[in-house]
Image 1 (cartoon, rainbow, N blue to C red):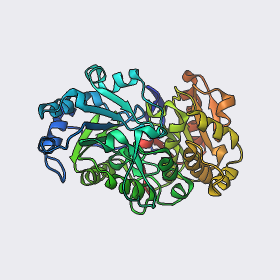
Image 2: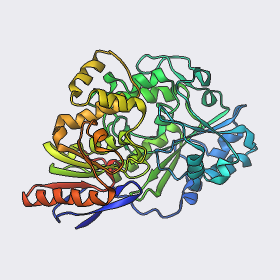
Image 3: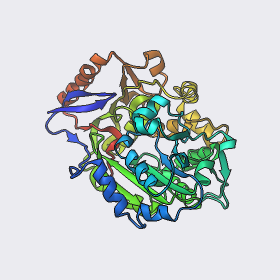
Image 4: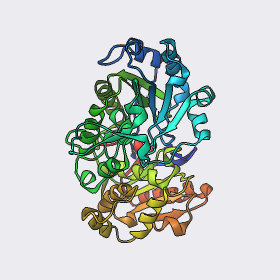
Length: 432
């Protein structure tokens, strides 16, 4: 059977055997468009009064709308203007509204990306601010301690707002169980030291710090506690289908609405693994998620429940922006071929470097299948660089990638190996 898998901004078409296990999300078709979904959602919120009712009693100060950055493919242009219009109908002027991008430790979104994400009417007429986790002047310390006993600083625009709205994409997340909800606040709006702890060795070495798991997950416990320290007044949770189209919008009180959205997502894209495969082929989600190798790691970590120990994984990503941050590139190069030393060093607290957590999660894959069996294909990273990224590196022209992967599939078929495929990559998260 012919299956298309997302790669950058297009698809790779592969011919797979009929007995191949296909892991796809199974969302029911949306009955309305994003505009109608949004209207229905804010009119019938979960665990909350309606948004207009809440806005009528807002405190003095700006209305801050927290949004995701460009790595999340939320089509904000399809409902954000509607949200802004609703806010203004309640007597809030444009100069009292801030669109705050929850970057965490990601780079700032560019004006061009803002234009694409939010649409011209929003990008040109509203104040848009990128969170900067290392800028002490943009942070404010909260009263109390987090779940882990830490002092917490958040973005001051969010803390000082008269009314707070958070938005986010809810999907399986390879560290925090599920994305969205409280993740807009932590890691989205916290300080560098909080990010270091949230992504540190002790949290990520916990077996519950994994995809689809919320119970006893230290990442979930920590960011939930931080969100409770300075909660939003309203939350808007977005669900996308396997074509990155809005499938559902569920709004209301932060925790109640997020939990309901998680239940919705879990039913649609967390299939049970009945038989582990000898070979797994996975997309890394397509653009924008696979714009860097750093983000592509999610693709081969999330598919782990579906592959046998010492089995093979074939992953591929567009990597149009290269490997990732300078810090990530440096640490991948430094520990290339000696990842066990990296684990020893971070366990002993010898250093903390931005983006080190991605290598810690990456090593889960190496522990299960080994570097030789973790194949990664891209046309955007030269072989000399790709070979330093703790994968079996395949740097090929874009028009040769499908053919090269097909040869490996054909060989596996001849050897009667069980094959599984993830056309959407990490947007579908199997469970044992």
